[in-house]
Length: 179
Image 1 (cartoon, helix red, strand yellow):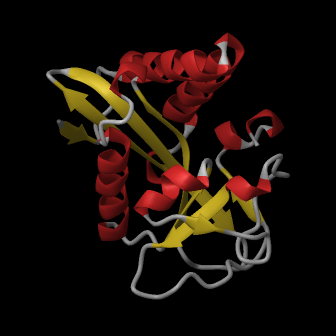
Image 2 (image 1 turned 135 degrees about the vertical axis):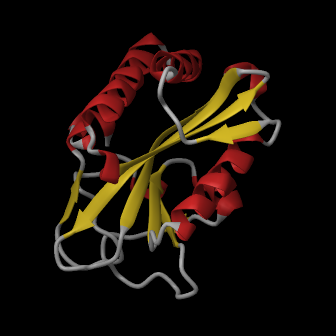
């Protein structure tokens, strides 16, 4: 398995991975919502505000993770949110997601990102260091339907201190249907 941060020439494959994975696990409507989100993230997000990581096996994209910038108005730290992430349905439970996330978090850390946040299954993401957050530690940019899924981690040697100020996200994530 190889990892890549390049999207040139593979945008449609990345979008298709998310569409198929979310449709298989949560239905066609969710597959369409998430693939539309990924398309918007990839086409409309400034380069400095997005990271796209993919896992490949024999030339096929089998996993994807998209991180985009969160801004806390009164906090100078660099914060990125993982949303969304997918592993090909026929490749679940093979360690691909964890390996992809470990790679992605190492790159973010090396690039000076201080905090990684996601909104997902604490049992899965806890395997790569994500811990529960509350709104006092890290406000979400929009109301959360499932607050238990709001999780994050420090990517520095320091423990995660409360992020200060109102939180905003990139335009593609600024949709209540996603939260």
